[in-house]
Length: 307
Image 1 (tube, rainbow, N blue to C red):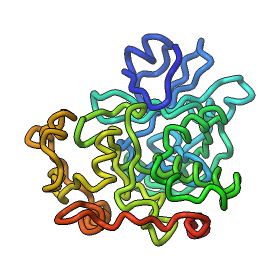
Image 2 (cartoon, one colour):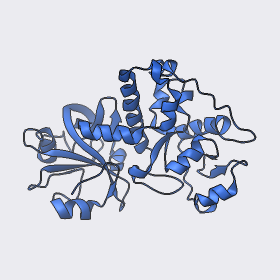
Image 3 (cartoon, one colour):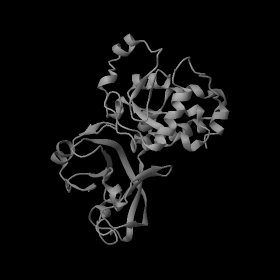
Image 4 (cartoon, one colour):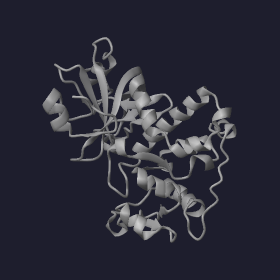
């Protein structure tokens, strides 16, 4: 079975019924398979374990609920996957009884030992954190999926080196990874398959004063391409409650042709930092009474301030 990056899979039917392995927990090691399956999600947050992505790669907590984590079972399998010829496939849980999103094949870079609470008693103990990086081919796929067309329009290609272009692509991919920890799917269409979504900045890339805003997951939404276009161009926005806002200049026949029915959209409140970015969008991008100033200050200056 070929897993596609961003696609959704049923853990039982598509993984364990085909390859075997442990059906519970975050590390599954089917004995007769070349794969080790890794599952990340929000379950560990309640116990102080929050997997995360940064410029180095993806940081995945090991398994073990009490006492210091040891290099046994799944933890040992990850540590020794290279010498044993095993491949690490990472999936993201979208919630209880929901599908898993495939994030790509990874390789182990290093292991870190950190202080963390025990899941059973809340006392401090030593936890294993694996630093993983996507294999080159999958990282290229993610960067291609992450590219925002409007970002490239903001840049002056003639004044930008190939090295800086790669840096932009890398940061866009990291931004998408961060958005995935905040948003599960498109708030308008309900689509969760990343192959049909874009990680869209709330506060536009060109308007971010500091580089951190450009990779902040709270500054992002997962949107279907046609919804992304409406949002980017200011035809729609959101209230903090999650309610869709329509510009008075948006033709209703266009909205209907796109299949968007505002009254049927399920509302979900945004978190505090998302609300701060949405305020900027409503004031500076959303077409309230007149088309906003859409002038971009792109070019080499944009890249130098990327940070």
